[in-house]
Structures are given as C-alpha cells and as structure tokens.
Amino acid sequence: MEAINLLEKFSLFSDHWSPKIIGELNGQQVKLAKVKGEFIWHNHKDEDELFFIIKGTLQIKFAEKTVVLHEGDMLIVPKGVEHCPVAEEEVWLMLFEPAKTKHTGEVKSHLTVENYDRI
Image (cartoon, rainbow, N blue to C red; front, side, top):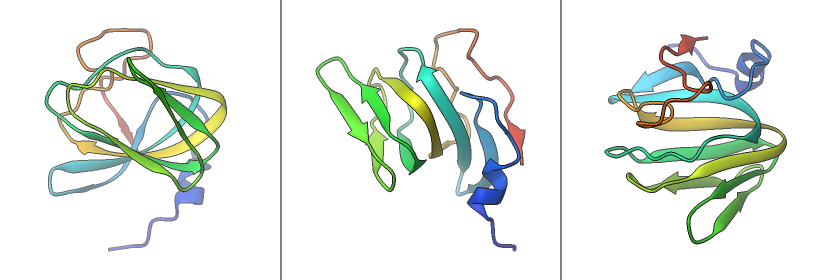
C-alpha cells in the first residue's frame, strides 16, 4: 500500500481521451484522463460511469440537456444513458467504472482504447 499522488500521475502523460489505470478496487478501475475537444456519443449498456473533475470544466451532453462540471464536481452517468463529453480547454478527470467497461461502449472510433495503460 502506497499513497497515490494524482498530480504526479497526471504529469506522466499528455495524450487526450486515453484513460490510464491508477488502481482497482472491488472490480472497479480508477482511471485518470486528460481530455480536450469533443468525444463521441456513446453509452455503456451495463455499467454506470463516474466522472470526477480534478482540473478544468467538462460538459457532458445528453439527449435532453447538457450538464456542466467544474473542478471538484462529479457526475454519475447511469448505465445505458447516451452521452458525449466535451472539453473546450484541457480537463483532467478521474473515472470510476467496472473493469469490463468498454471505453466507447459498442461504438468503434479512432478514439476507442482497447487496452489501458497502467501508471
């Protein structure tokens, strides 16, 4: 058991939309990501997904509304809900999701990550 320093972990990568695993607990993975621009519309059929904003402002578009998240905010997207994250400027975020969660759900894109790096 060792403390995990988030700022140190964020300093280890610069790519966008490519989450990095920093830990696991009870079948859940804890991931860090840097995001910028617009992701793709997708859902996770069987898994909820938690977004926690460390730095910046993230918009998450839904069919009926857009939720804006600021530093320190979090949002749980329920399983099966179509969503599209958007970051006008770079955002640092933490994700909690089951290990079996596919990055872009069933949608395949140039942004899809099949194998996550561990840092």
